[in-house]
Structures are given as structure tokens and as C-alpha cells.
Image (cartoon, rainbow, N blue to C red; front, side):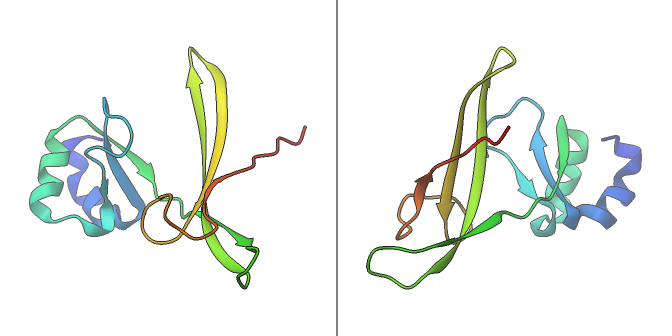
Length: 113
């Protein structure tokens, strides 16, 4: 992102997440739709990358004693030295992944060749 393209980024900000180039997890990330102009100006002066917004997938889950419910899904690939170490999925409701959602938590991931 270059500061001279700031107006263009501001107009399209709702399509993007902004993340610190050297960050990890969700620390210091901003969803473009929620940015104030002050924070956006800081992002444009800092070392940030932009990632296009990708809405979470959804899964229908049937619990033992509940009606089927739609949960959001989040798939993560954990990589070290260029090699995938683990693939994990989480099912959740709300804004962020958590382990409090009824029938949520970790989920099976099948790799189909």
C-alpha cells in the first residue's frame, strides 16, 4: 500500500482487512468497514498489508439434543518452514471464533486428493 493511493484505498476500504506486516494472529488488525479516518491515516503511514475480506463459510450442525443450526467455519493451516504441520477447523457463532458455542469448537477436516 502506498500513501499516495490513500483516497482510492479509503473509497474501497469496506472490501479489505488491514494487518500489520510483521503481526500475527489478529493483533493490530482492522476491518476496513469499521475504520475511522484517523486510524486509516495511521495505517497509511505504517507498515500494513491489505487482505481482501473473505466471509466465513457455514456448516449445518446437528447436536444430540438440539435442532440443526448453522455455524460459521474457520479453517487454518499451520505452517513451519514451508511445510504444513496441521490443518484445523473451528465452528462458531458471533463475530469471532470461540469455544463457547453449543456444538461448536474444533471440527474434522478431510483432505480429498
